[in-house]
Length: 286
Image (cartoon, rainbow, N blue to C red):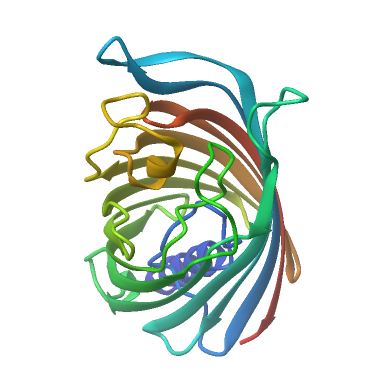
């Protein structure tokens, strides 16, 4: 019985490690097997009709007449270096514009920020009662786009990421994890702290349902439509947001198909985005 339980637990962990590298997924304690790799193509469509900004001296949630819409295509990859180490990378292209045509802001497109990361798992739940624990270090390489409009597709600066992650599988059906980290960027862009809380329900060897709650806080000292605001200070505002996402992944041999829905539930100096994404992943090696 003990052998069977351990075997089932390993299968559950392998299934979680094989999940596609989602666009907003963050780090993971469930790493690919040594020598195993994956490639993921993702498409994201998001739009907003409201945003949070200063009105009469107070942060308010109001309609944004021109609206915002943005589409992005990303290529992500992971590679298992060993039982305890893994690499990840993401490159992409994005286009943003007003929903109104013509809109007051220009349509912008360009190469999105490139992200490179390495994860070290220093505790593995397979070998004891403790949850898995890991540290992830990441690089953010500035993309190619204008930042001085609401239609900007990023903050326009290089940066570093550091996060700690903890996770555990319960009863081979439920997996919970949490990540707390910081992003520090160049060019006086405000630093950010973030938290991700994830839950995965392993329905079968072919289906995993997932949910995530993401919180982001920055140390900026400017507000949209606050004192001294111009469009040129947009990258430096005190941006905060809470975001909920729900989704599922179907696995077929070496392929995974993932669909997710995102909703910004609260914010500061942020657009009230809704989004959907679809991802196709191919696993090889290992």
